[in-house]
Length: 278
Image 1 (cartoon, rainbow, N blue to C red):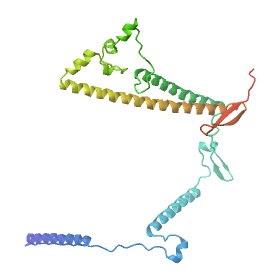
Image 2: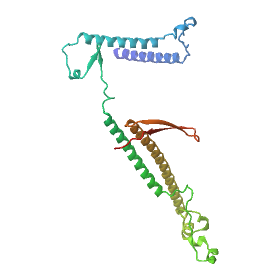
Image 3: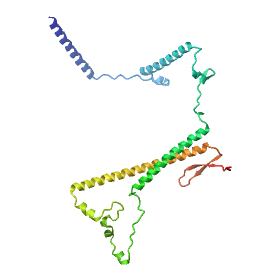
């Protein structure tokens, strides 16, 4: 009878569990009333917002945290060893019983050292600007500048008037008449005829190559534009650092404000007094 009663109990327990689970799911499905927190009364609005329990918990935790910190400090002060010594005491001091920490960062370097560091900063920025300028010149030499306005003309010299009248540019340059205005990638007539006889597969490959070349060209122009903007920013930073270095140097100077009538902006210019160099 023992095992049977055990099985009966387990089944009964399972039934109880199923019943409890079912009742809890039904309880969750029923819409409950939303309890709203009470706000501050109208005649007590001058006292501010009504403190909720969450606000009280935060305030209490902060209060006890500060209280524990004060207790620890009091304990350290009570157990302090008057003969305690460490080497940092040699460079520290107290003023009216308050420990004073010397902030030597402002006077850490002399004026000559600061001037040298400013010169090194200007030299580094100038080096980067020069490297960027060289890269820009190299990219301009490699790119054809197709989008820019044409600056050059192709002049062909002939012997007499008759040859001038019978001159045919298409025959002279050996290219179709529709491609004469091209200043780049101008194929010859035999190349054009060969392209017409190409298969559909080869034409598709040629179009893909042309598309990739166009994409690379646009990417190169985009990079050139970014490098030119970077060079402009580096030049502005270099000029600003140079001005700071010169202002920190010796010599009497005067600030002059120049008004630009065209743009309406005010430009600040510094003028140094002329000194006789010995």
